[in-house]
Length: 356
Image (cartoon, one colour):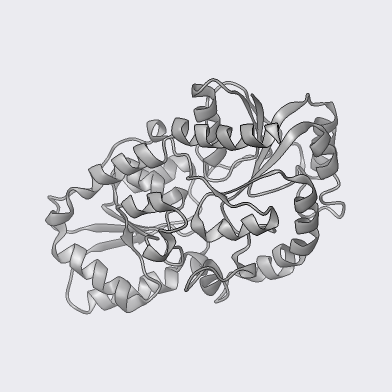
């Protein structure tokens, strides 16, 4: 099967490209931009297309017109070659449809297709945090694009995948819900587990958007813990390159990833792969949609600061008793999110769509 993966977010397509290649698929990864905070790859069949800003729409269209045909063209967190800002957004999608037998989309974050705003699946969602102060882009661009994008999406995309239960509502746009775990490459993450001999536990929080990730909740919870006289170190970072982020991650013991999610995102998986104790989404209400999340060893990070503080207090007071979590996290990532295993699930879905 010849597959073109378009773009990358948080290393999802980098990991999937690796997995597809390992199981014998002909995979090419086309990166439409540079991102220093994403993992890099030296794998074969990877092309970076990142011309000057004013030339990008024309360069991307030229690439589309001249590129060969594929069995599958897969998008993650986007449905178009073109930037959201261009007035002729999505004009390329019908042409994309002629360049493959199956157009595929993976929902893994808030974009014009997957935005949680259009669904009420769980007791809370990312929007609840985002609306406190990070919703400007969503309100001005993502939400207005949804109606137009959805019509084009429903006409052209045959394979629709959600990487986490929070985005499973996109199945209603295709009459089929396929939830496939994130692929995560453990081999590019150094093993540097939490230190259980240290007297002072080091906590890290690395939000890409403060309210969407719940930084205000995290700070409130930590203050409640401090008021009980419990000692710890805390560091908040953002905007680091991938290499600098890994260095910061090595120096911590606990990572508080995010509080408005029911399951793990890629950042939490990278942290587990390094051997850190992770606070992130692990809500039982999501288990039915994605049964593999039952084995998730992350500590659930509630958006209620009092509940979060209570769990943080218990971990800090009983720190040595959590020494088995790094190995459990590594095993979970290596089993559920193994790139080859995930690639086979994608290939199974794509093969079924090709035969229809």
